[in-house]
Length: 374
Image (cartoon, rainbow, N blue to C red; front, side, top):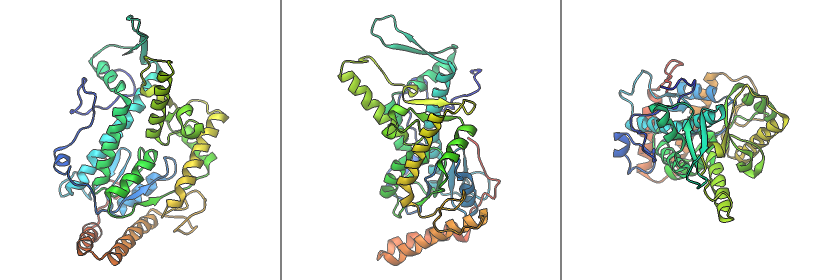
């Protein structure tokens, strides 16, 4: 085991020689033919440091199976006994998705700290030999993970995200979902029978950038590959990879860097919360957050006023967890009623009615106690 303070979490299904890291549980394999879910989707599109944990706790209180980074709530008791297989499949896929994000994050961290080094090969090709500073079986396995092809990584993220959207998970909060906004919305349209309920907690971009950089270690898309070059950004991680690969292809076509292979740290950068945040860096974060809020605010059906910003569907009085939980329940129940009234399909009506019975007459609640760390 490495002595480093950060570790990449590996599952038993991953070996040091694998290059494709897509894995499935038995129940996922059995449900692989299921393309859509009749379950509502409540999606908090705002990034971390905008009240995502408050919304997550409210969703749990409301009885909605939800995920938030390394936590999830799916039952009023510990374990998965009695929980729908389709919900459990969603949690499995969530952690596979989060694991892929963490691989990139940890690899960029290792590179930044000098734990991973690149040496010129002696074959004269210009290719680099990537290795850990310390030897050992664990470190060799880490290098295999950190040098996985970026197009495979992107493809696997979309595969597991698709499985999450096909499942019966309702609440999606925090990393990595706001960083995959266009993909979540696109798959939500294809794989949920009901429109996605988008939630946004709008925050002043300057205060958000200060809080985000001061309180969190970040994996950022490098400015050169960020949207419109606005600045280093957490957002749009798959778009970041696409732009980096396109840039590398263009350079190779022009005869530059013909042996260049992209690694996570070529596309993303790790930033410690202890680093000084320059005005240029903060301006980039602010510009990207402004863009994110401008693009997705028109889609928001719920915008609780956590930070004194303009709000939709809520009062200006101080909100409690119970009030937010009520608001979320109310939005979802109204969506169910509208669907039932607007559809002439008895099948759709039966499916909707069954869902309401399962989740609201016998609410599932974590009550602030059922949180599981990965």
